[in-house]
Amino acid sequence: MSQNTFKNKLKEGSSPKGRSGKTIFSWMEEKLDVKKILGEGVPVQLVPPVGFVALLALIYIYSNLRAENKIREIEKAKQAVADIRADVTTLEADYMKSSMQSEVSKRVAAFELYELNQPPVKLEIPKK
Image (cartoon, rainbow, N blue to C red; front, side, top):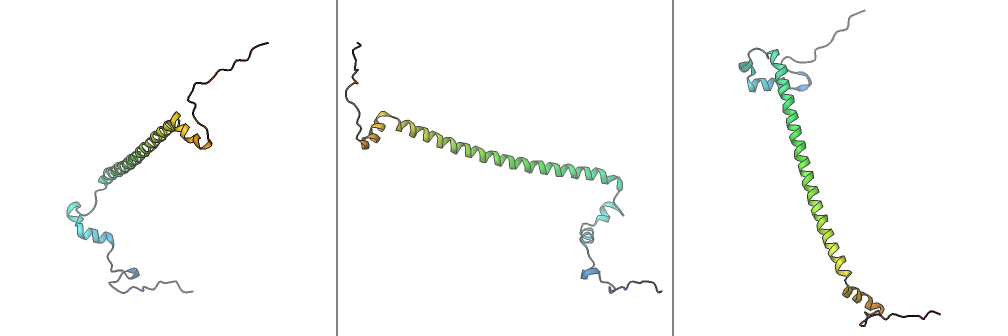
């Protein structure tokens, strides 16, 4: 039985899936010229401290964004409380005005009930 072999369908100088041979990493390496900065490779002993600093930076950014969102929520809540407080004050003033004797007499005039102009009379029933 013969052995399985793979055919090389790529032409020389081309890359898989029709790409031009450059990846984003090779482009970054070309543009940033990492070899001038770091030499031939990245020093392995620098990876943990740099990773830790990057993690701290991400935590700092996350906490700042979260704090700003909370501040916006608090400001919205303060505005809502101020609006409700104004509504309550208006309703209380309307209620106090509507419960005045002159306002009540105006409303019951439609039912032909009028305010007395003389003091009430006390009726006394003699005991037997």
